[in-house]
Image (tube, rainbow, N blue to C red; front, side, top):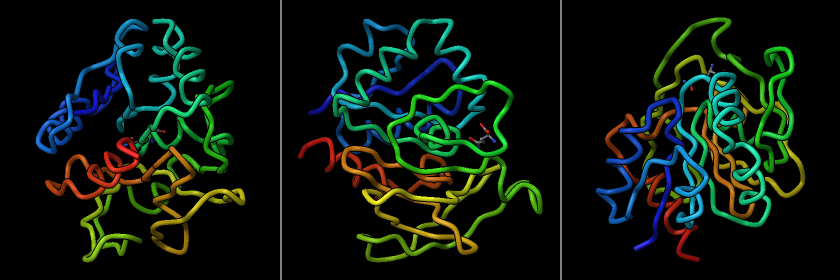
Length: 191
Ligand code: GLN
C-alpha cells in the first residue's frame, strides 16, 4: 500500500488521514523533511494558505515539497491546498508564497465575497453520481493552462482540476464522508 503523507503543520489533517487510511493507504502526518522523504504522495489539506506557507518555510518543508512536486510526486490539494499548488494567486496576502506546479490562477476567498460557506451537489468527471461538496472560504480557479483538465465547476468556475500527477479541489472532500475523490487520487498514485 502506498505511503501517503498529509502536510500536518496546519489544517484539517485528521480528516485526510482517516479517509486515506479507510481506503487502504498508509497515511502519515508530515511535519519534517525526513517524513516527507518517506512518502510516495502528498496531500495538502484545507486550512489557511498564508499560515501554511509560512510554517512550511519555517520548518524547512517548502523547498523540499517544491522539489518533490516538480519531480512528479502525486499531490492532492484541497481548498488552501489548492492555493498552495497554484502557480498564480489573485487576492493573495502580500508576498504570499506557493509551492506551485499547477498551471492555474486561483482567486482566494472567491465565493466568500457573497457567502462564507456553502454546500452543493457537483458532477465530477469520472464519478458516476454527484459529490456533496463543502466550500469554506473557498478559492475558485480563474484561468487554466493547456495541460489542466477541469473535473468540476461551480458558479461557472472550475473547482476541481487535474494536471498530470496533480489534483486539486476548492472544496473539502475530506469532510464529506465520501472517499471517492481520495480514491481517484490513490489511483493516480498507483499508476
Ligand atoms: N481561505 C483560505 C485560504 O486562503 C482557504 C480556506 C480553506 O482551506 N477552507 O487559505
